[in-house]
Length: 337
Image 1 (spheres, one colour):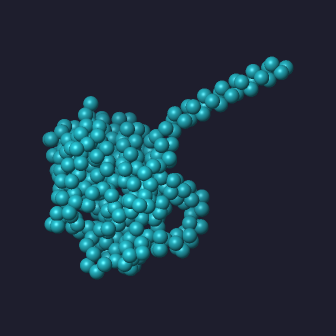
Image 2: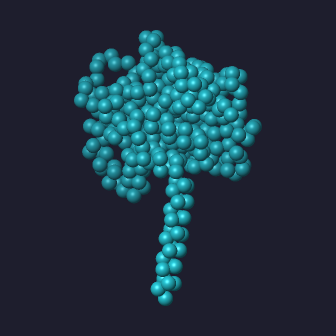
Image 3: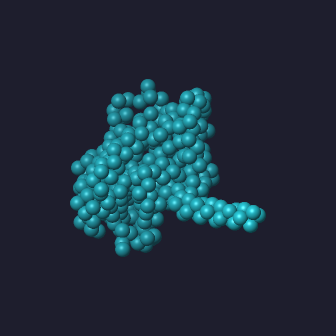
């Protein structure tokens, strides 16, 4: 059966690689983003992979635009099976150097964009009692770091409202599912176009993962949405565990290291464009693709994702092995007696 999928923020990065993976399944993929060039490039990638693509220029901060895009998706391909919220923007700067307008804009895109997408998806999925919503979260939604207060606040908010919605769906005994994939640092173009007031170019905090790894995490969540969360990357696991058991020590560690670790060696060039208010691929007509500029430093595999996807099988095998070993030991004790 062909899946009908909607992905916000699909012109680059995780959203784009996720679209390609769904395309390889032969899915019908509706691509939402602001920039025309990136959308066209993503659509070409999906079709080359074997799927069908529809592009809708959408600012997810505008609820009416998101809902109209959802209607276009269903008009073109039929009922939506999977909705993936990815779109975000950010400002790299100390909190005191971010204006209220900038903070509001990051919140409207990176948090309310997820709210708007979830609202539009649920309005359609609940009527049919079928569908899956995948929120692309971040380890920074559990453990904040300096210089990204607006983004971290938005990611924390996504966790909070998604948990509430999940409880409501469970209460209603709905077959609609919602889940979150907590991501590590990923090599996407965002670090080249994010608004920054840092002296040096922003960079992801190592270790860095390829966007394909993150996309595989999204598909795993879409395939098995009964789990509350998926964790991608060893750094995500380490960060979330450290936050749980040693948060004060982590505060002090990040106060010492968090500024330098988010800046590369290159100075920020004067007049550097950013995508806070407008997409950077228009009107220049530049398609930035899925990858950022850190290919030589990024990883293409996540053992933690594999463990997440196979947790039940591993538990079953471990249990069966334990029972088998127990039986052997019991038999040996009987023989010895």
